[in-house]
Length: 193
Image (cartoon, rainbow, N blue to C red; front, side, top):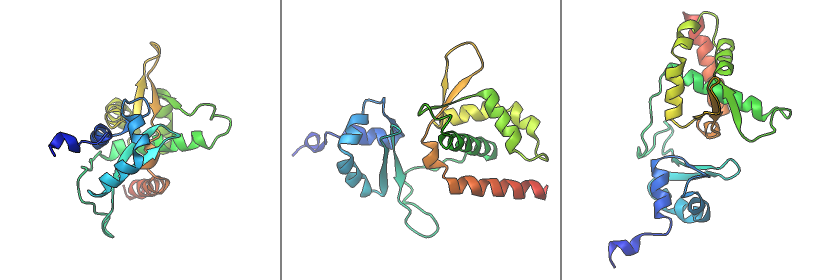
C-alpha cells in the first residue's frame, strides 16, 4: 500500500482545521460536517476535539485538557494577546451576548458594529481611573489584531466609518465565565492604582 492510498476523503478538511477556523463559506465546510465523526475520531488520537457550530456556520479545533492545571499536549500554540486586546475582546463578547439576548435586536444572526459603537462601549466599560484617551488612540491597532485573530471582520459597504461583523466563535473562545472573571480582575486592578 502506498502513501497516497492512505489519504482519506476528509484529509483536506483536517488540514484546513489544523490551520484555523473553517467557516460555512469555505470549500471544506461540507466535508467537515459530512465526515465529522471520522474527523473527530482521527483528531482525538492527538488530543484535539472537533467543535462544529452548524447553526452559526463554523468549526474549529480545541485541545484536550490533560490535567488539573489546564495543560494540553501543546499541539496548538496559545497566543499571548496583551491586556488591551483582551479588553476589546471582552467588550465584543459582551456586545454579542447583549445582542443575542435582546429579542428586539436579533432580527439577523449577524451582529454588525460600528467603530463608534465600540468606542462608546469601551468608554462605558473602562473604569474612570483608567487612561481611556490613550486606549482609544490605539484602538485601530487593537482592532487589526482582533481581525487577524478572525474574531472580527471588516465590512466595506460605503465610505462611512468602518463597520465590522463579530464572529460568533468569540463565544467559544471567551466564555461567560471568562468574561465575568476578566471584569472582576479589571475592577481589582483599577482599584489598586
